[in-house]
Length: 481
Ligand SMILES: *[C@@H]1O[C@H](CO)[C@@H](O)[C@H](O)[C@H]1NC(C)=O
Ligand SMILES: *[C@@H]1O[C@H](CO)[C@@H](O)[C@H](O)[C@H]1NC(C)=O
Ligand SMILES: *[C@@H]1O[C@H](CO)[C@@H](O)[C@H](O)[C@H]1NC(C)=O
Ligand SMILES: *[C@@H]1O[C@H](CO)[C@@H](O)[C@H](O)[C@H]1NC(C)=O
Ligand SMILES: *[C@@H]1O[C@H](CO)[C@@H](O)[C@H](O)[C@H]1NC(C)=O
Ligand SMILES: *[C@@H]1O[C@H](CO)[C@@H](O)[C@H](O)[C@H]1NC(C)=O
Image (tube, rainbow, N blue to C red):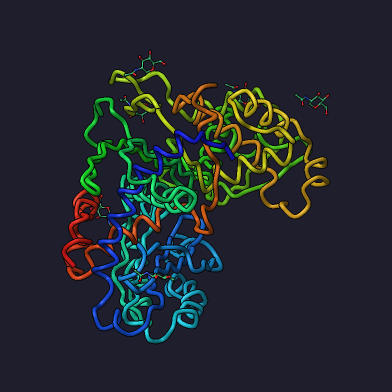
């Protein structure tokens, strides 16, 4: 973890205190008055993070007693649904719904009965469902309806199942990061977090089908689509956010296979410079091309089998992975890649989900502490250079992912350094994290915090744009009630 200086910490604390105080408004709205008189126990909320590769069910809790304390929302537990993401059950009626049963039963047991009816349940689906909604909209609708119907059968207060836009995913992740940092750091610094601070922490998310970058910027945001203005506790934040569909881990692996098939001109056998030397595999062509991320120009036989032979060549791997990015077609003053506007990165960042796993694997595998682009490159080089046999001996238990570490590491390198523009000065300001203070880092907490605020107006809230939803987080709630 990158340690931040005291001064920086203070700035984070003060800025995020705004978010934190704002949330006490939410909590007041959530707590019905009868309960306050009764028992000072917890209130609960459930968010189903329906990702492209799997679904995670988060239970959050916060003190029900609004008289006391600020009602910090923390994670009570998380449960990983067995099987794939809900989008993987397209065309398999009942599959997505039953994949949620085990974890939802567990939630029913874990949350006290007297709180069931007061517990909101949200399901948010991300890029896996965004892709399904592009390729098979009817099946996407059917899956969403099915999981919604399922969730209504539990004794909780179901609030909706929806597909988040990339911008929403990015912005809710940013809310989570800044909310958690505030809580995490707060305890040692009570009293300081009300002084006027400015800086927030950026969020870097790397999922199975998309990746997001979100941070506060003072620069002009030249493309409206990337701009989010949030008013939180009397302070305006100008947020830049961008989500890249098809730049998640699993889609990148498939896009690279499609690129190698195309450039090597064979549907039957290819060499793969990112797979370890000594590794070979065979896959059906349909598994490569059955995604909107790989548009095939020429016809192909879906059932044909492709033989893949790993060569473990770092330079060729990096060269091919780089070709997944367009770095030279910018029509703004500055771009990240693919012609997408991006201001200069500034401040501290938290990188989570697959960024965290890739970073920690690289450090573990190589013993290199990755605190600069050079070290990232060096560690990637070492991993890409490992034979499959060496990998298997060194990392027993990780078997199924071993072949992909070189690709994903090279991808992270190109994305962060050549794409987003992190350099020797800014890279050390990235902190790679999975959890903060016991709570997993992702969009789901920010989502619940933002939506719960509008709890009484249930019907309105699900149609509200993120911008207006967040806009409602106002400190006045704390005073008025
Ligand atoms: C809040 O709770 C703590 C113990 O949890 C107690 O010591 C304190 O007096 C309470 N404060 C108020 C204002 O009720
Ligand atoms: C699916 O995509 C269409 C077209 O972009 C959009 O209008 C619709 O809202 C999406 N469906 C869901 C459930 O988000
Ligand atoms: C991509 O990989 C192939 C096969 O290993 C290699 O021949 C080619 O030079 C690589 N392309 C680039 C741009 O590095
Ligand atoms: C830049 O190139 C990428 C990939 O070819 C394409 O998706 C994108 O639309 C292009 N952007 C602009 C602004 O030309
Ligand atoms: C952005 O960064 C570039 C290169 O580091 C620098 O030349 C430019 O002045 C910066 N722009 C702003 C608005 O800070
Ligand atoms: C790559 O592997 C070969 C043989 O195992 C070794 O001689 C070479 O030093 C390695 N290179 C790097 C950069 O790790």
